[in-house]
Image 1 (cartoon, rainbow, N blue to C red):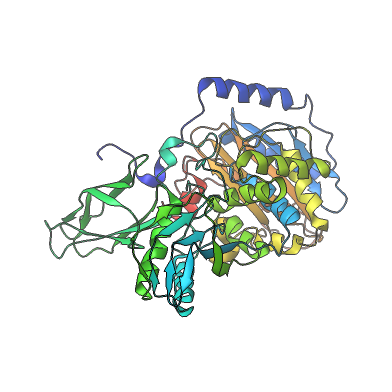
Image 2: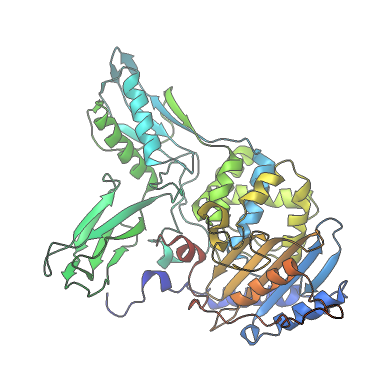
Length: 536
């Protein structure tokens, strides 16, 4: 579509004016008149120098650094300011989930039968009942194989897709409508399926392969093939070396994909991850296809939505990994869908309702019970995708200090992205940040960013072995991203103060306390998941 920015550079929409005014008033009312007196004069001078960076001009910045063992505040700047957390909200959701559900908690997906069974025939329906945010296409194939292994060859009824464990609201409050087609904004349902090992739920891979020669239509394929997508338009094959301008856009409220652009002859295929309308029925269709491959004939093909009221008996089931294992991809690659599933699951298990309001009420009760109830802030989802979310740096830092005594802390700490580590499921969203510094393989932290927002909260180990907790939230910047400032703060915490060489020691170049210029073209307008996962 001419004139539109590439998908991964598409801007997040801002709040309506009234909501923006409300957020600004909350922010202004929450900031302390004076920042606390510094406990570490050298650290204060160094961080003040970093925060004087021109990229922060007119931005709202809140910072708190604590000694993780004693809780002593080592540095603070507007620690009580209410700021947009973006994906750092996942630290709240994940810690609450581990505490309320338990590190060993697992999700179960069941295949159930209605009616009666006579030998190899089920006179009735098969019901696929969900709950697992990490259910893969392969898991559905395994379930179909179990059905076949039980001796069933014929089902006289239908495949019913039951996503009623959670409510029927698929998108969170304040989520941008123009984010809906993209993998970081999946619809949330009690039954969903992912088609890759990083659990990008409710998505289909759309792969465009050039034709044999320029002028031919490119080939477009879906994975999984059962995805209920229709195509409008086409992608042309361009001359060799002409580059790629492939666009795949899902229309709002439909599963029609608008195809446009071109791909050069001989070029590598281009793959996009696109969300699917009605994730429960989508999962049911994938399961129905797997049944057919395993020789189980269902009289009424495809899949239909279950009501959740069907009387049924269990047949076979699949259990997820433990929650301690599931938070690894959720935090490492900032998986929004998993965070939202955990929020609704908390509501279902602890409050009896699988919806955002009940889940968030339980999360807030967890915070209050641990002395973190004030200031109230505002939470409306589990991932931080909404701009309605507000939290203070002080609350973030206090939470990170608090959870250190939990039995699951070691697993959770390891699940945080590790700065400068290139391994996908170690470094995560920080794999390419702070490389070659003392922060590399030292800082464990969660990033969070969207247009005008860039945050980093986590832990750094100082040269003297002390663990430091830090929360740095930067909101309302425009233009060049302040991300290098965030990283420079974390590096300073891991490196310690500059030292004066002893007499006779060769002089080294003084370490600069200026944050480096960004060299990756990042301007702070891309959603973090798109940038890091490259699945949009």
